[in-house]
Image (cartoon, rainbow over all chains, first blue to last red; front, top):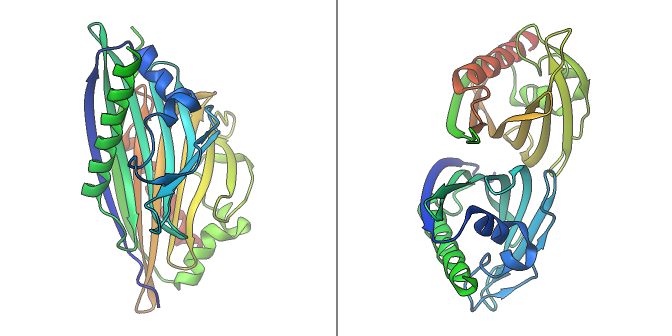
Length: 154
Length: 149
């Protein structure tokens, strides 16, 4: 009998970016722009990111260390308010094993000349895989990449 | 001003049913069984599609008898027969988004009964609906499953 378990967790990350909400939103809405910051570490082998950015649309990307397990990300867009909010759900597989399902809310708020981004992730980790601390750390890394990408084009 | 907001919450409910996990699981898996309880209180289902499998998507239109203004669109994410169902759903009212949920249903045999745990992680959008109201609705549906079983 396979051991089944679930662990529910929530984390929130806030960032201030020195560009407008429209500019930050565009880094999520366009496949090319998103591929510049969304994905695993530079040294990973990665697939192309596919993005159908509309409510009911899907997104996927996969990648992993050379010779190691492949991480598969598959998302469904649930709610989109241009320049203000994106709500999606996504599942992560490690090779063929589903390790987690998450509900992610990204809010884009004007902050002076810039943008305050608030990301909230509500997750369920399945059967002992992964952990909330690791996911939060990974997400902070992605937002670091986003900040660097925004500064490059600023 | 836009008046946009996102309110996050988690609802946890537990029930004990005098039935096997197989029968409790069937309350979701079998269309005939699900149609008997899948709407809160005295509300009615005006339209419902079934696609109970991983990656399956369903639509349900429901609400008060004379005003089925709510639409829920469900995506099944993880299904372990007689053990676990994980799905997401978005809800709109007259086309306005009101919430998105990630729901985990867990079932385990406990003697001759089944212990069911429901965990719903939710974001309420723009002040439409709230955790208290949603909890009442979910609780009412779990009671209907008990009555059906």
